[in-house]
Length: 407
Image (tube, rainbow, N blue to C red; front, side, top):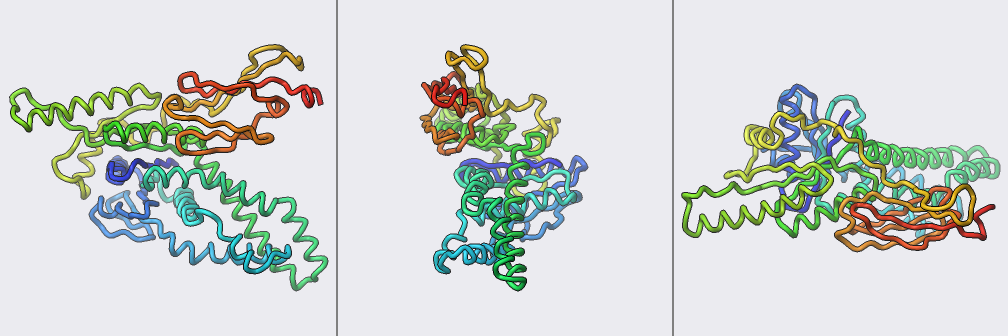
């Protein structure tokens, strides 16, 4: 199974390129699903067909669908929300407050991502191509499983769920027990789903992301920030796609049109050269005279983008780990020891970085996103002494805290 997600700033052509990629993969003989989590639902426009919540076959080997979050909210989530209310009521929480607490942030996005996982793991398709929303929404979407797992564990810790269910059964009798069983079972199922989503997204051999942009400085700057933010979440970007690259003007073309085309080409080429220096493969899609909609136009666009390469190939180079710990001084349990936590974040040098130590976690904010990173055990007994950026690495220095180092 392979999952490829396309995202980018609104209007850069990510939906078209996702559709083109899916069409070319299907023509290569594979079973492919193209699915959209973008609320704009323009994937059907790219294929020039009407799409709904259930996958429909558009071409031999190619199916497509739009995720219908409304029906998901009215179905499974409504039942789960009722179970959560039961747990809170059993814990003595006021009914009105319980209703507010069971409104989890971003639940519609979570349901969309869960539906993608369900489709991907159904075994019906070899490759699932996902047309995500614009980058801001996508960053929130891809960070949700981890964020909500933390939220859920703080609200209903797993060990307390089991104990409370047992106590409730003993105290309230057999009639109350089934309601608690259903509520705790539903909560455990949600926790399991969140863990499954995190595992799917973090599996670099299965899931990767393609950032689509137009070769313009403002768009490229946002793309660099997004690349850093995705790396912070431990997600792999396997390619940048510069879309709508203008052709080079022939020397015979003169006048205002010739000047404009040459200037535009020069500006775009400079942006592409800067992007090529990033540690992510870069592909370029030429600007087409007509909007590429329909199967024939999409296939032509995809063949120009990928050539003879496999659009679903897993990169040969393994992704660098998000973090590693290096000892920079001392040995063993010496108080003279020093350590460095290195976070691999491509593009981190281009933007501001904020670090906060919170107990055993390091809160890192960069690229417009924030993540709580659990410190390795050895660093939990240390204090932070400084930080600096070296290329694509964020390096945080630690020294032992004498008060807890040898405990």
